[in-house]
Length: 339
Ligand code: AMP
Ligand code: MG
Image (cartoon, rainbow, N blue to C red; front, side, top):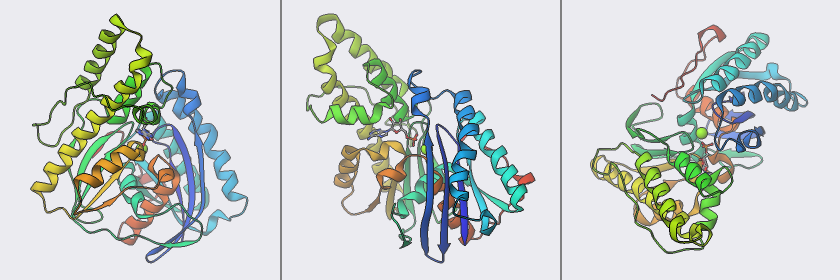
């Protein structure tokens, strides 16, 4: 069957077309329009501008798919219902509803965080591929620009949220601190690059370590900004930037690993999946592998770790395969907050 997936939760507009059959999937198109240039000057994503860009880009991306494919052949549409930015989600929803009405097709709403998790099971390659298997219960950490959430999945659909950030997301802190250092947006990859040049650690606080599985990063962000201001009083900040990047990244990743370890000890965890934009970080990947030598660890391929339509199309397929029924266009809604 053919499935069209649509992603508009944040600052990436994505539409993808896949073909799927039993435990196999084939990526036919994965169209993406990234908006980072629009938001770069503001140092973060501006929701209303994101919505405007989605509205502009969605028809253009769809045209690229329609060129070689008759959309009436799709089984259903899948679209990312949230969590995400409300205006951005609404622009996606309206587009999907119009398209579903026009094609007389139904829709499977896909939780964006679930799609990040599922994305670890496929590869970004041409031709048919077998979907990777995962052993439940699985521990799933979604760590991105908008989320830092830890879930325990009993099976494909049954998830229990163990904890999430009570303030900033890990990626958001990387972006904001990078901005304070005068580095370009998005800050995560810049910080990763610069951190490689240093091994000097400035101690930074690790808030909320003892409070269950929740995270809190805003205190760390403030401590980092205070540290930068302090350094600026007696020397040029430039020479300390690699050390600052190294310290910030290390602190955030140690917090993530601490919570993962705690969850692993308390639940009978088999496999671990880490997804979302920050999961692209090679240092984080190495640290996780080192700390969990006896678990199978899944990361998404680099291209699939940020937001895209393919994850949503694939998520729709796995839900459908596991019994989710598609809805009519009048029945769908969006959910800005995570559940
Ligand atoms: P997402 O919200 O999933 O689209 O991912 C975007 C977030 O991932 C931003 O906060 C980026 O700074 C962060 N990010 C992307 N690549 C990396 C990297 N290599 N290391 C750390 N953070 C990253
Ligand atoms: Mg995302």
